[in-house]
Image (cartoon, rainbow, N blue to C red):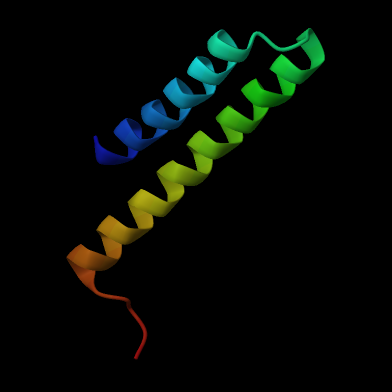
Length: 60
């Protein structure tokens, strides 16, 4: 749930940027794609941190 929440937060920020700035279509598409990539990265970071916190780093 935490990783999905972080992804939703990134997508919300990207949406707000598009709504507030009202960029040209191409720039809006770039912002939207950056939001999707940012959401995927945020999910990966949160998942990795939670897994390492729960099970340790795995390597010594």
